[in-house]
Length: 152
Image (tube, rainbow, N blue to C red):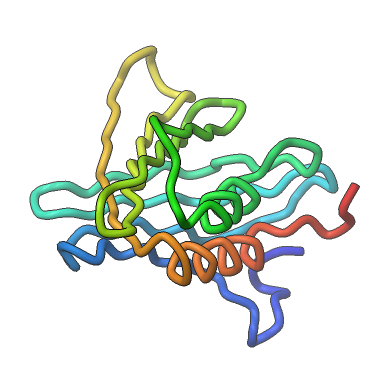
């Protein structure tokens, strides 16, 4: 399914805005399926003085996807110790989650384009969300954006 073929009620962009600083935002957008086994999408990070973008981030249908990672964080709304980390196979997107006081989750989004020269650049921003409902809503939105056409 290409983004142009999506039904009107299907999201083509998921925006993750920090609850503490609304100027901090991560966007997942432009899903394109040109292979039955994967989907490519764009990740953008925006904050005061920072704009970073990685195109062609790959979601494979047989790998642990971002949506289940976020759903597990939402399910563990009472908290956890340490950090939990998810990344794409190419390591162009890494998400690190830490449970913080007050029932919030700090999600650090690290963008690192792998197609360029080694160590060309890396950018990270952190968004804060409520552990329960906001995390569950985010997981649902990401699932709708990146869902596989034929689950394996």
